[in-house]
Amino acid sequence: MSSLATITTQVADAAAPLDGRDPVAPLLERVRAGRDFGPNVYSTRDVLWVLYDRILRVTPATVDEPDRDRFLLSKGHAVAGYYAVLAAKGFIPPDWLDDQGGPGSRLGDHPDRTLVPGVEIGSGSLGHGLGLAVGSALGLRAQGLLDPRVYVLLGDAELDEGSNHEAIAYAGAVGLANLTAIVVDNSSATYGWPGGVATRFTVNGWIAATVDGHDQDALHAALTGHHGHRPHVVVAVVNNGEQA
Image (cartoon, rainbow, N blue to C red; front, side):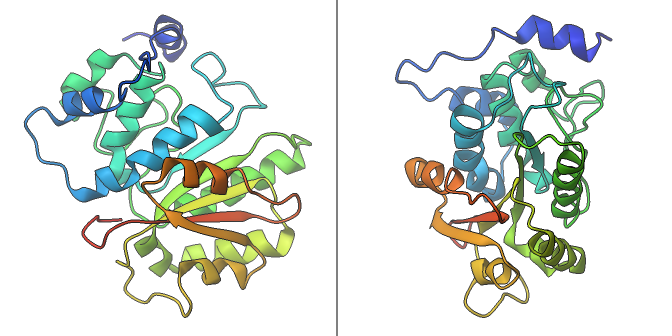
């Protein structure tokens, strides 16, 4: 099996050309290959593309650089779209998509950071990604690395987990200005929060924006609208049928 460094070198120039076409759709079809995707995959696709195409300061050649931006996928069950975007941007060979989930594949049903170039965390049970993102952002600040940002994508139902309440409160209390959370909101949380998802964060000192989760320009504006002294959350609203 080739090393991650070798694979990264091989695919560094393999990003799909845009030239007016959707670079993700054909790659997502390679992952699907006759299987049915739940709406959870399609609910995250626009957020993922805006992040990797217009926001994140990371490339296949800089996946190990200390000053790279970090992206953490807490909503790991939406991994099919994530793999398609990674292939479109040259992090992994497109051929890997043809055997996603197979017995010899690096691309499992949740991403594995030891097997997939560019993946920052392995995911499993929902509710862990935000805490890991808080720790990553805090660690960067402790090292004096003030330019990299940490972005974490989670579903609104993950906010039912108590660990996320602690992460939200802590990040606000210590002013983790290098942290951005993106919550894909389809109103699937069991408990919810008075005033909506954004207020769950703002009451703890975060700044927040709520946008259409499929409007790429609105997502870009919201994701780049972070404040210099406080953590930032973008609530990406999608249809109720799109599982988050």
